[in-house]
Image (cartoon, rainbow, N blue to C red):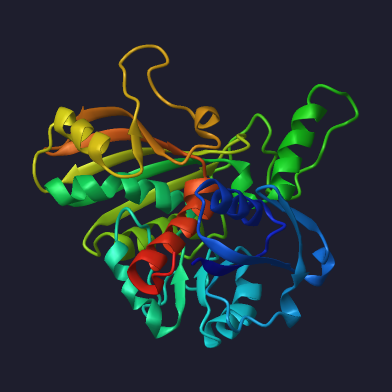
Length: 340
């Protein structure tokens, strides 16, 4: 016996990836519907060997459906997620709307699976920000061993995190560098992204941080431990898919780099590729289409008493969004719904 699943925002990058991953992981499904706004009504979406046509989100009745995977913006989520949840359909939301709501669990299954039981307060579960998701997968097993005091992270985030228009902008600006007269002005980003890096993701806040940086701080605290201090610098780079992070971790206790490497090798969702030779590490181009969060360049930080540096890479459309949402659905099925 399987589940009745709805994918909301099925025509977007994350929605399509959700469909791919549901099929790849053979999630037990009896029936599935794909929803979109009226502008995309009737658009075809692939699901395994099937072709599905989108239905109108505005008129859809969620009654009798088990799980709705939401991959739309916060405005649409604010309107439709409570409607779905009120019918008894559990909403797994990829937007930022509910992440900081104390009545809504924020889940990364490798880190805080037991927190999912809090879903019943609103019948909604939040998916974390893409940059947070891959980082906490690496931090949690190390925190369990040596207790993290402070994290300093610099991100190198791909344009796919901004959607299809950003991917197109990078592609067109790159082509324009080689074809005189074909230059493309920046629209998605405040400055040109091709052959450039932009230290600005989301809006600026009063203290000078950006919203993306604030998200990493708040979400890490909610998922792992409120006592962890986090400071982040988030940078957009001219990469199509795959986020990278340079993470410096300070612990309460000493943790040897070899032990850290062994802990990460055994941790769920992680693949350690760490050879001290040319090419003995993973880059974003190599992680595209993969489920794992890759860890490389694990080494002692000699500038503090108990410090470790590492390099963390993941496919942001997968672990950072669609895969994590499907993993939440799998966890919900095992712990609560128990149909599959």
